[in-house]
Length: 112
Length: 113
Image (tube, rainbow over all chains, first blue to last red; front, top):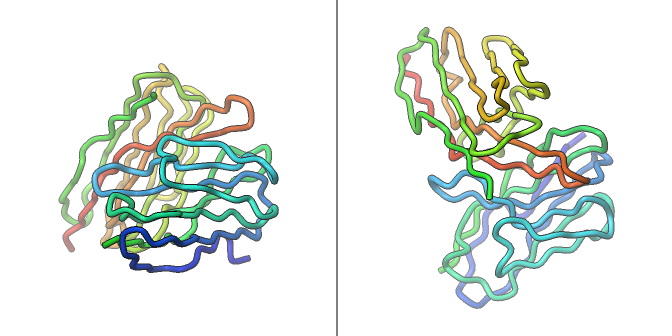
């Protein structure tokens, strides 16, 4: 099993450009999460999906949209990137009946 | 919202020394998780704690769920160079189907060989 995979690994955007960060898990988990990590801030929840077909806002959702395409995939979209969205983005997943979340390797995004 | 205070922010130690770090919360959690993040990688789960007072070990790592449910600590014994990284605590309330995590800001550990 690959666990949680994320693409791309690195990305540089110009202000105003759009892009979609992809996440997939092969553990048959119901719940998936998107976090951003900034220096000295820890990880902050952007959006999550408790199950296929549902999505909810987390702590810092402004400027982002998400799509739970199917049980395996959960994408994060930046419609008009801003320098404040320069960060490392992590996707995580969690199985039913368990409390632990498992993380992907991250996408490092720079917005110029 | 809930806040976690994790300390210390950073530690510089010699190989072989023991390490202790802790997290305190302004509110109660049902679960405490400890993660380690290596440079350029995602967080990896080290230890999960589910009950107040619980003490759990994973090799040289020991973590405890505080009896008040508002704190947790992680100890690393006999540190080695590969222990270098950022350690995060995370608290969780399993309300409904959310199981959202609140993270501390991390402890950066440097081990001098």
